[in-house]
Length: 333
Image (cartoon, rainbow, N blue to C red; front, top):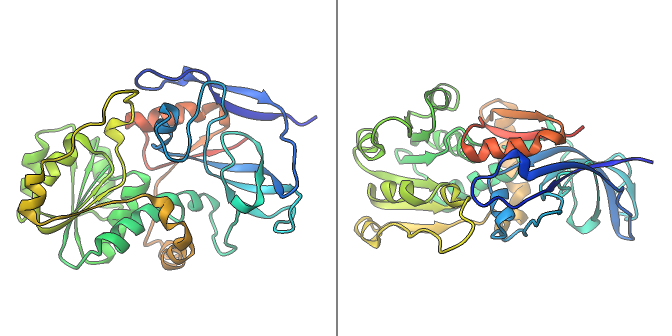
């Protein structure tokens, strides 16, 4: 009998999660119902929003102790009770933190045949890349000469924002945690400057690198960093709000207050919330636009590959602590 290795939430963390809050177990093989496909997961995406799922505060669903962790995967169909899929096809789905999953065929998507590196469908050609493209290109509409500021500069979303902004002729200033990440942002991703948030005063450094203000601020952090950047918005600025990593470990109480309306009024800024799920119907349009850049190595991402499900929990812990570097993916056993 085949064993289905799974990672469950063992205990809900009160603050920052640790590896002991997760447990790798041997679960049963899922039963296949009519209209479903049985998939063997190959690659699992580890993303910051999973912390909100653990807290029960994410629109994609919550995870309680004993539940298998939720996550997007690239998988192979091993059995099908749907005429939409055949055995052996590669697909993208919500396969979760496990080796096998039975999933309704209507929620499963075939992998484009012209994508050479499957993990790219979880990074620069996946949800992080779509987030970057939708927020920057479709919503902020950058113009040549704009100054774009992006935090978590070497992360999966921000690394795409940097490269897409540069391709549009923008000046890009990243913010990252550590000089090694700042060096990567400038030397590999092409940022014009990158501020180490661990060194010096962030506001003073933004004043130095953005003397004429910030035209586009792409926010993935929230809280104090959002306030500091909004204080320095240029006239006609666009602010994209799509992440709140500084607040992910909150387990109760009210969310943090936002920036003062004074900053928004003074700059005549447009502030736009972004939920990437709203753009799922345009995913193929995004892939068609970005795949040539990926193939030409003009759009790239650093991957941090975790070998095996048993280490997935630690991978999420490191990501949330800022110790990960690039897009975190798990190569499933």
